[in-house]
Length: 318
Ligand code: NAD
Ligand code: UDP
Image (cartoon, rainbow, N blue to C red; front, side):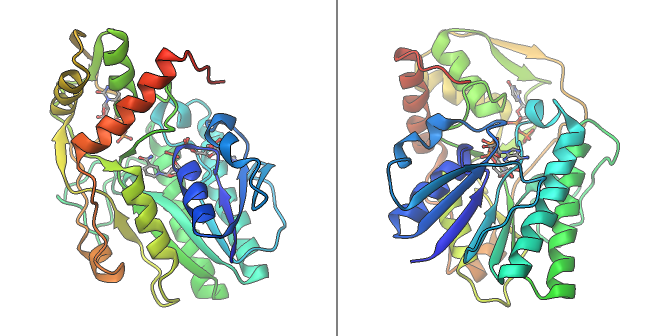
């Protein structure tokens, strides 16, 4: 049994990761400040004696003894990370420093949830880990993109300077149950709009692309990465290479929900990347042939069922 700290554990991805780590017989400590996370995502784990929740902000130092740390604390949806951009930078940068300092003191392994956003609006397609990206340092997405890029720098520097055992994964657009219904990201927006019969809001013409990964595939990749030998540090892309335009996604969701919603077109937000698709050959090589197993329709079906339950049972989120 390992003792594992998951920061951002009450969020969408963190809650799935906590559950999976508990299922595998570990002791899990979930740290979160509930900025975008929710008690609803972890309530079913609270009576498990091997699960512990701690309300804490990663920008403040934290002391504990654990074997492994998954550092996920950070808002991930553009509307949330742009709400207080200075706080977003602090969460990424000071959160990384605090978790790396902790890992250094207790000699734990530490995994950083980085992002495909480090590639910005990419000129190379699909994106490979050796591409340095095309990121605007002073735009509306910069607090998130540059915050995550700086956290990667910190991870590498703590590794080289202090021999901290690090792992960096770059997560591509991930979706699934436990996403906040008002999260603002495209999958949750379109499903909620379709189920409620509201207009489907496509930003721009809808020909920008994203590659959507179901959360279980990501969690499998994260755990395999954590379990690699100390010589494997990443960064490694974890995503589903299946690439769709946003308009295609809207049409699939409309069809699957049998919805009468209309598509409307709104302005494209500043610096919205035109295309995104991971090259996952490095992940396959180092993660024992890991690759996504859940295609878009099967993943969407589970996600639609989740949001349907929230609507029919009128479940409230803070
Ligand atoms: P989320 O918003 O659901 O989860 C983030 C969690 O971090 C929330 O529970 C939130 O309350 C918590 N948090 C935020 N600031 C904090 C702070 N200062 N102190 C403590 N807790 C804090 O988002 P998610 O989709 O689950 O993303 C989790 C991680 O994965 C993030 O680091 C994100 O950048 C990364 N990621 C996600 C995606 C994706 O598509 N979902 C893609 C790339 C990277
Ligand atoms: N998007 C959209 N309508 C929405 C929400 C998002 O057309 O209601 C678009 C957004 O402009 C972007 C894509 O969907 O091109 C993915 O957006 P999301 O916020 O999910 O993630 P990110 O831009 O960070 O990849």
